[in-house]
Image (cartoon, rainbow over all chains, first blue to last red; front, side, top):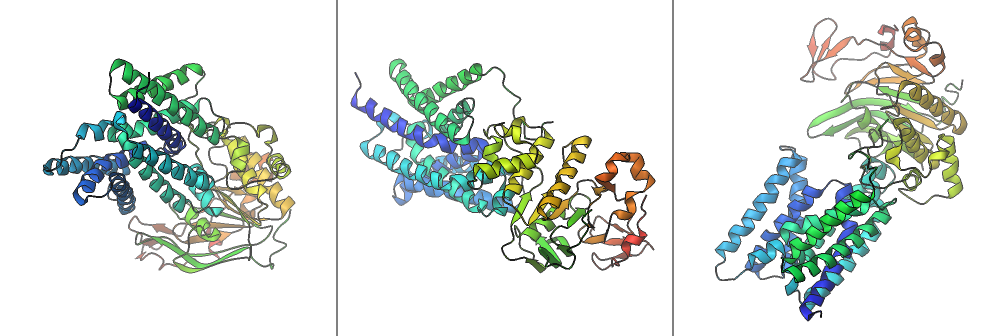
Length: 272
Length: 276
């Protein structure tokens, strides 16, 4: 029943979902959704530069996404514009630069739709090796970084006062984000990467009482979204990346139904 | 009351003429500050006057750009920062908050929670706590590390008045029991703990300092807070002999305008302050 390309897609998608779950939790906790989006959008510029200099695509995306996050940190320090406006500028200008550069490179045929929305059904064995190798590396670093990163997420000053170096944790986290974007680009596409980071994590929130539990729940929700989305894509002949995101959305909505006594969003510890 | 019996003991932290500059602007300058074991030092001042900056320099989170900050060797600091907010999406129990930066023994953790009066909330999600309970949880976090110096940045912010008195009571108990030094920032210009040994008023520099004793019995204080609060709170109502202008210069009482820092703050400045 399962064609070979479909099995490869499923294996690749599940590997990716397992990796992005815990990382997506930090994106949600740290309110970095738009930041992640900006890094993802810069990926197309990475693709264009990779073609131009004839280097590995994933390497190109990783480097440009990292540079985009460093540029953002630098511009934030300058303080000339709000973070919100800076993110908007970086996000769309890198995407536009990428599109323009790709258009100029008439000597190469680039499947733009594949990069923007993912082409999971064209995943090769090499891609699978990259997803699992890179994913294991990302998760390994995240486990090592877990305590300082979580402490920095709760409160930078506490983390700093108790010697956990939150700035370093934050920088390494940026590198992990860039790596995940490089890995995920082929599966869900540049425009949908952030949804795979955020929606499974949000869906997992209702079932978790600890940060670690939420990370695992997010990974499981991601796996369910990939399995469901790819099956739907095969059955209904819909694009694979968007199908995965739609299934993730359905899971998130179901998670809301399961817990009707939902508290107000954005509440802090100081409710009284 | 344990007043500064250890006055001549080795200071836990000592700042001399310390200043911190960010982006070409001095956030705070010329701070002299000493905290000894068993002593309570309270910083007050308007928003942006450099209270938090001073405290961060005192405990080494930021390095001073001028002057010196000396800390006792192997000083253990318990720090409760200002405005800790935890995103609702982060599932975190009080117990997990306690173990956030390192593992703890169960007994130690229970003792600290008990000392902070929230032993019954160990398993509660931090987002469900009231303002006072949350501050107690943060205090318990700081306590479990058995600090020599407890640094509290606006510990009663977002806490209602009765909770405020209870929290100050708790802080005093902690000092009495453990003998640690306490460096406290008060969010209210006029309210400081009665047990405070030294009140330091900041506004980009040290405007004045003194003991709050002279204001304890003032009629205005009693009228505002009642006699019962007298055990815990003191009002420190003061006027400055100069005004800070928006451009950083200072207008003195006689109307002359000088560059920032050029005006002096005599040691006896507290004498000029109206106690109520």
